[in-house]
Image (tube, rainbow, N blue to C red; front, top):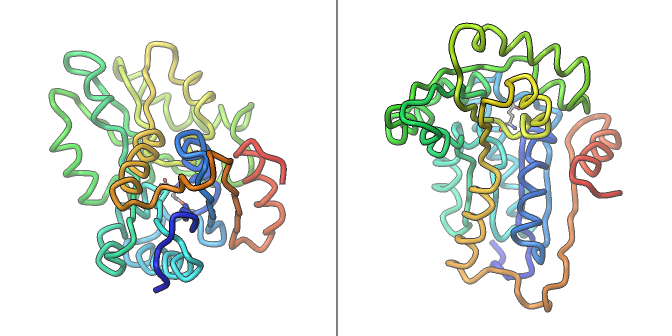
Length: 265
Ligand code: DGL
């Protein structure tokens, strides 16, 4: 492996455009870094696959990003983090590898004993990593798993708001909302962050909504600083962003990625 240098890119990857939500936050927290983003839309959704499949796919993505010279890897996907983070850290012990964690802890403190919906992919909700997070950080909260079938696919189609999105969200959430008073919701999948406004409107004003993007970006900063890899050599100049996508309709996915990032290609 080539030696890691401060100007080398921070690699961010996800099953598709979801991790763009994390890249957006990373660019606010660490604007001077150079970024390379890989969206594996050809294999989305990861959340409907089994652990071994996701581990193999994520390993291949990490191998390529490291070959490309990534100085750190951000797994901007809760599902791939659950399935593959431990495995990747063993395979590449010299590269900081930072994963996502559903924002269960802040959600558990919104009131004395809150009811919290955890919206995530079926694979994330099944995994040991998530169950032990709930045991560790749950406190007096009651957590309710909400597998959101179809939501990743809709965001991959570029739909993050509007009638179609709200209809899907009502079909997923209404049953939970009618049954009980909900205090908080956790967006445990990076794709859902793009639909945050619609999710908030369907959940209603009373429900506080949390995601893990800022926590992850702050952890990336901490890990780069610890490894003396922060790109602080260029007088605070804005770093570059390169985006790749594995989809057949590659150009369409790149357009969508830059749009979600808030940049023109
Ligand atoms: N963005 C991924 C996550 O955070 C979506 C997984 C999928 O492709 O199902 O879990």
